Image (cartoon, rainbow, N blue to C red; front, side):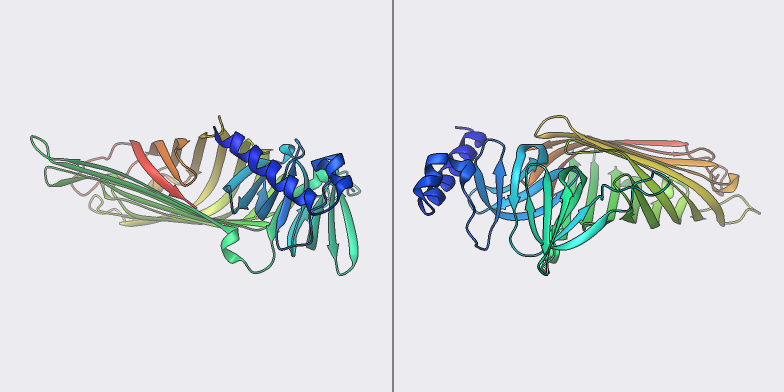
Length: 375
C-alpha cells in the first residue's frame, strides 16, 4: 500500500467520521457537502472531495504546505485543492483585478483575517468586513499569529571523502540554505564551502556567503533593496572579496512546478588579494553590474533540478568579469533527507598574479555528492 492509498483512506475516514457527527443529510450528499466544524484546525478539500484537517503552514508559488498529525508534512499543488477553511488569523497577499491608468497591474495587497478559499474566490474576513478576490490573484498565505518558525525553512547538506593508504586525501563540502518568507517578502542566506587536503597539503579552500532581501511589488516584479556576498579562495589569490548592492527582479515563471527569476542591479565590490607583484596594490575596488538568474523545477514528485547563475562586470584590476554557477539535482529520499549532486563553476576572467608571478587559472570546477537535511 503506497502513500497515496494511505492518504485517501485516511481522508475518507476523517470525512466519514465528520459527517456522522453532523447530519444524515450530509452523509447522503457525500463528502462534498461536509462543512468543517469550528475547531482549532485548518481544513483543506481535495478535488476528489476528501477533506484533511491540520495546519496550513504556508502557500507560495501555488504550492500549499500542510501539516497533518496523522500524515505529517505534505505539499499540494493549488490546482489539486478545491476549498480551504482556515483557522485563526492569516496573512493573505492577493493581486487586485483592477489596473492602473497606464494598463499596469495595481500593487498587490496584504490583508489579515480569517481565510476561506472556494473554487473561484479568496475570502478574507477582518473585523466583520468581508473582502473577496478572484482566486487567480492569490499570491501567498502565511500564519499571522506569532508562529515565527512557520516563516523559516532550512537545509544543510554535507559531503565527505576520507581516503587513507597509497593516497591520503580528505574532501569536505557543505551547503547551508536558510530562507524566511512572508506574504510580501523573502530573506535568503546561502553558504557554500569546499575544502580538500591531499598528502598533508591543502589543495582546495574556498568559502562563499550570499544574503539578500526581496520585496514583492506585484506578482511578477520584486525589489531587492540589498544583497551582499563574501568570497574567499586563497588558491585563486583572493584573500577576501566583498560585494554589496541593490537590484530589481522579475518572475518569468512562478507556479507550483517551476520558478524562474532574473535579477539585475548595481553593486560595489572590494577585493583583498593574498599577494601581488611588486608595485601593485594589495586591495582594489570597483563599481559592478550584477546580473543573476535562478531556475528551479520539479522533474518528478521526488526529483528537483535547479540552476543558479550570477555574474559581475567589474574593472580590469578586479578581474573584468566574474561568475558563479551552481547546478543541482536533488532527490528526496525521505520527507527530511535528500541526496544532492551539484556542479559548481567559478570563473575570474583576468585573475591577479601573486608575488612570485604565478597566475591562477581562470576557472575552478567542483562536482559534489552530499546528503541534505531540510526543515
